[in-house]
Structure formats: C-alpha cells, structure tokens
Length: 225
Image 1 (cartoon, one colour):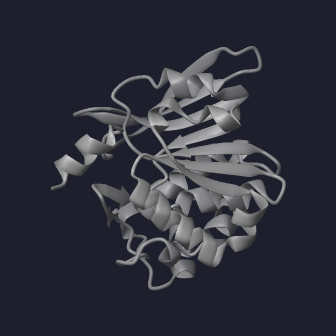
Image 2 (cartoon, one colour):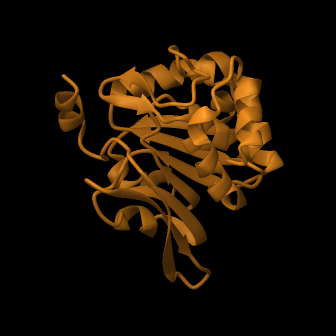
C-alpha cells in the first residue's frame, strides 16, 4: 500500500497515507497537512516516491516520512527538542517543528551547504515565524557526529543509512530519548534505539528499506556525477 498513496494535492496525499494506515495519529496527520511538501520539492511533490533534490540527495518518499513521524511522535511533543540528520530539503524538519510547537526546538543538519541554503530559503519564505523565533534552524555540518551545540535531544531522525550503530547520535539522546535511523549497507533496516531513564539502550527493527548512505559530502557528490 505504501507506494499507492500518491495524491494530486498535499491534503490528498496525507489522506491517502491515513487510508493506508501508514499514519494513524491525528498529530502526525495535522503536521503533514500543515507543511506542504511542494514548498520543499519542485518535482512531483505529491508522488509517493523519493524525489531527487540535487547534490546526490533525495527527499524521502512521503510514506517513509509518515512512518518516521509515527515512530517519533511521543518524543515530538510540545516543548521538546529534536534533531533531523541529513535534513536535505528541510521538509521533515518542518513537520517535526510543527509537532513540537512554539516552545519546542528542531535542528536540521546536512553536510551539503547548498542543500542547507535551499532549505533555509524555503523555511524563510513559508515558515518565517519559526526561523525568526528559533523554533527551527538548519545548519551545515557532519550529521554523523550529531550536533552537540543543542544536545541532548528528545529524539533524533536520520534520513540516510548509517553503516553501523550510530553511537555518537545515541550519546546525544536524552534519557529517555529515541533515535530513528536506517542501518546497513547492502541490506538496510530501520532501527529504533530507545534510551531509558537510566541511560540503558534497547533497539528494535522496524522494516527493511533502501536509503542513500550516510557518508561524507565528497563521496556523496562523486557517487552521483
């Protein structure tokens, strides 16, 4: 069902994700309704498939964003602090910002400065109140190391596949906190890492996926030349 959720409008796309039971939370649906994917993806924004956004990067398929928000919703409550690694277009970063509300804070980090600049322009144009208040910000940097300036985080989302267990990111989680990340190389799976109040970490596998690798900017650019 996941790949059958394409719509002609943002509302139709999100409603199709609801009908397919990919999302079921009212908070997730409201966030995805509030943030128009067309603000961040110029080509077929309401198609339920990954879309190329330049510099060797894609904006993930809407159903994957739905799965991510569903799994992170308990850690995206009003006032919470979140990190989006490999933020790319800035779309999911904005959805997360919608969910944490005016007293929350979300950082998007990407290692391609041009993508950071593009996402900043989209956010400034369509969600300027959020960028001006500090509710959301995007920065250029190596997301594999997280973003220690604003850590710790209630949750972290990673939009590219880590080759192994992302210890640096787990270390930047609050206790409790949650990390949603694709892990693997030839074979990848979404793994959710949960840190409890005592700092103990458990992991569980959600589904098999195929993401672009979480790598350095030079390799990302060269792989798509």
